[in-house]
Length: 259
Image (cartoon, rainbow, N blue to C red):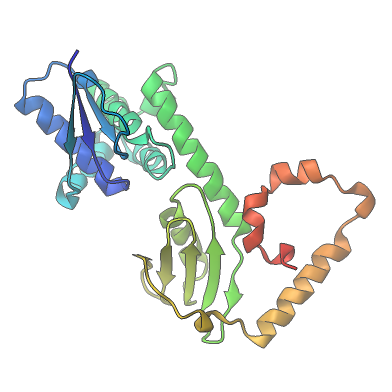
């Protein structure tokens, strides 16, 4: 069977643009089934035989149309889960989300994410769960420092692109603060001016001298580290259990684990 692979940008807007183009491409070319069409966020190292590859440009208007359809016919919960899957780090996420949407719209099933017997749905569910788990970790493990300019600054390093889901959590809890969260993995800053809407900036260059903590902040950090050390019971230390609750990859950006 001849197949088509649509290459799209690794972003929610890019994947949703790919979904829109996949439907349009199927209709215009009288392709019998969506099974012949696939989405990918990575260029293949080796092209398969009997497969046509096409690059899809991100189109925000088309992405918004797909979002509107998903919300109207499948509901907000399904849309949220699809978004979590789309920000995951898995290479198959675009294809899984696309075919899950196809199945959900075909059946008009607002409970589509419960149909784990379907292979594409099961993959989408797994990808969304991975992003959701890491998001839950970062809600607990993100540590802010007060800079000399009064801005609260935090640095994270996550596998999945969850910063756009993490920002609303802190914006809701710190509406009167200027704060910034930097994702080292994607080089993206989440910026929240006090009493205003937050936004994301990628590739922004910041003078490192501006990230110096205040003297009071350094004192509080030292007190916090001493507190964590004091309450620990050395005879009951269980490193293996601790690592299962708090993965090592989060610790370099956590105050209590700094030297």
